[in-house]
Amino acid sequence: MKKIIILLALIIMVFPSFAGAASQDDIVMMGQDAHVAAGNVLSGSVVVIGADAVIEGHVRDSVVVIFGNIRLESNAIVDGSVVSVGGSLDRKEGAQVGGEQVSLGLGDINIGHLP
Image (cartoon, rainbow, N blue to C red):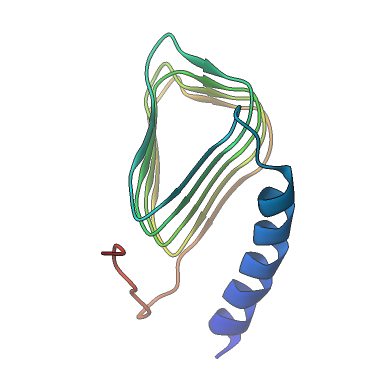
């Protein structure tokens, strides 16, 4: 029960900040994977719900994935934080993260990918 409360608190904190601040420089996906290719620079954030994010390029803000996985390839650069809730975080050697790195697994709770 404690994990569910933590998850709900995180979702409530994350959604309003991205809903009002999302711009064309952000990638916000629900149920679809997000990919920042090698050599690309994204000046905003990556937010994914119910799918995965693969970062090979440069993200100038944060990467947040809820109920999905984050893969940071060896040439990935994330200036902000990397947060995975209910999924996994795979950071290859050489990947750079300027902020916090948080991975919150939910144990037996598994939502899976959205349809």
